[in-house]
Image (cartoon, rainbow, N blue to C red; front, side, top):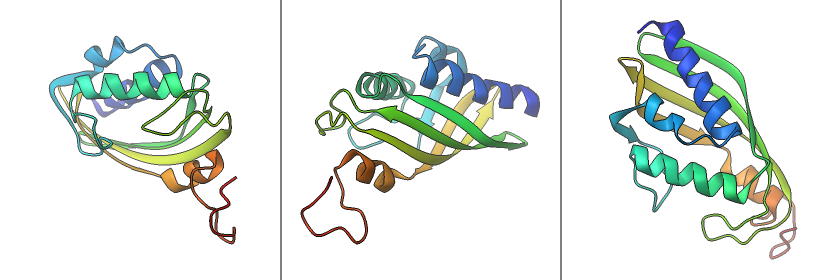
Length: 147
């Protein structure tokens, strides 16, 4: 596959899986031996784990929307800088629904083989998200007073 085809598939994942909740597309976009090197605790680093994670994420943040701010590709790798936004209306990874909105950024590195994701790495600004949702203290905030 070409670099442009890999970029299109990476964009398709954000548009159709993250933003629309179309989890059936995951089987089309990920290879059978997919490994998520950044899978959250308790989530298998597999295609099935990715499906479960995005189902949990969209259930907790039903209005989830991710935007690709930058996308760069070379060889078999695609790198995306994304911004996601959502309102926490359901429980997520042990945290009760806060009803608050949050916006967070992430960097994703995807490795492709034969047009499918085979590996994923990510760095996500989880602390900022947790602060906005009221589960972590913001800098300068008195101890024990998460909003």
